[in-house]
Image 1 (cartoon, rainbow, N blue to C red):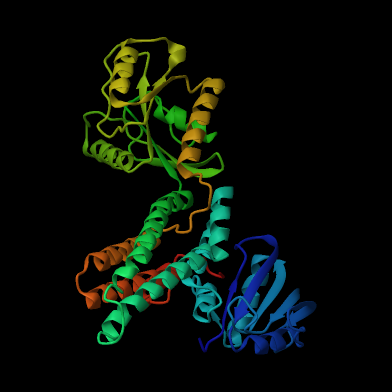
Image 2 (cartoon, rainbow, N blue to C red):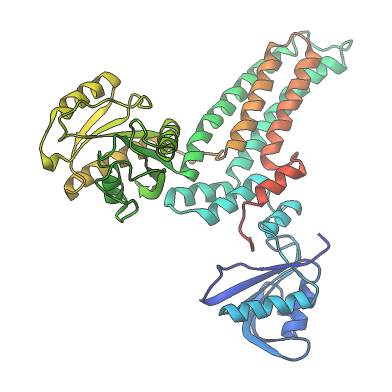
Length: 444
């Protein structure tokens, strides 16, 4: 981190104000070169920015934040300039002329991680906070930035150290006056830790869905009303509606907010014997998306006279929606209701063209989403990566409990600790760090 980086911290495009951040050993020189005088620490001053040749750039608000009391832990500065594209580009050029370089995605937060201002779990929370679209996502991300997962990991690690001390006493002092059952005394500690880690791992799945969105698939035969219902729930024309079968060929995902949580509605290709390769691929994708969804809505045109056949992807607890109720009732209604009862599905008869019916369905979906994602506490673990490390730690601790050799049990406890350390980045290989921080936006 010997070089000095800069980047716009605000979104590109026309705006009232743009913020350009600088971090690194040349930050103070850059401020003096452009603003002539450096403001007092952690203070803002209005300065006319000029190039070393005297060319006026813009009148700006300049902030100076010396390390280690800054976001990155390094000397930092911010230039708050007018938000025109030309102003920002000219300021970038002036900083580059001074020997600074444009930051990579996530590089500011990575420097905060490398200087110890944040651990890896908190850094991931920063990325989630930037990406938050719903109130639930904001609360969850803010909890992680505040160190909820880090504090939990620290507590688990203390328990592991206590258990490891017991094992190592038996290993290192076999001839001393150490009780023979000393290793067995670690069992309650390890069993408690296993329970806590399993609970955190199970809750991580909820955290992942809060981050990524609750997935709802609309399934059914062609012309069952899937696209019409998707548009009604989304409140806009997100999918093409046409009477021609096979209009929808690919999965159309539309994000919506239900009960304060992000949800993904997916309009899928009509399930039937495909007439060409493109439609066959659409049907395959529809079935794959539905298989991984949290909830499936089986749409049946209730006005049809033909018998309805439930998709194989349906699961108990899914919902059968009898559509087009404003067009009368046909034989498909009875067969769909019978199939739904056999599969353990709730049934709702409605028309997507009747606002009151759509409101009833939306309320049902909000109840499902809230029941699945709400909890008394915010999840501590929120990513698949967290869940994988928790699972590895649990596996190692189970091995330790089953081991008949104290030395091997002690090694399993050590490996469990290493798995937990990876959550906060104490033991992360460079490739993992590169992948994580590459998901950040430039300037953060």
